[in-house]
Image (tube, rainbow, N blue to C red; front, side):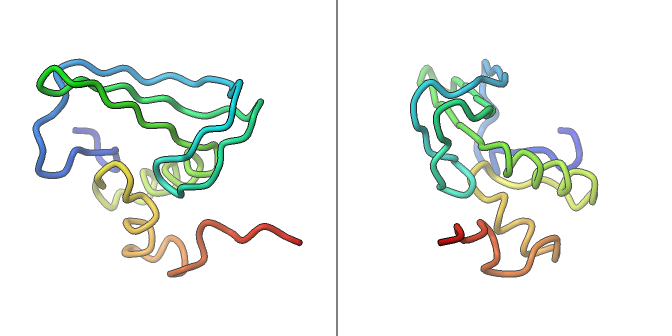
Length: 104
């Protein structure tokens, strides 16, 4: 596995997967920060099939940027859904500071 990549942790790797960018036609939830991916925002879709069951992971643009920083740091891999925790553990972001709070 590529250094700094998403991983499946202790789980078996998917037998089939695909990753692509898409523009939102409806609201979605980011699998990393749990914020809403709003209509017209560009986001990443990662489809994976394990043991005959498909899973879909959607990642917002801000988390894609954070993932790129994590990958550049060379600090290993992280389980899908734990990007924020992984970045906090290697001091790329301050604990509790991500996702940023919306301005009133």
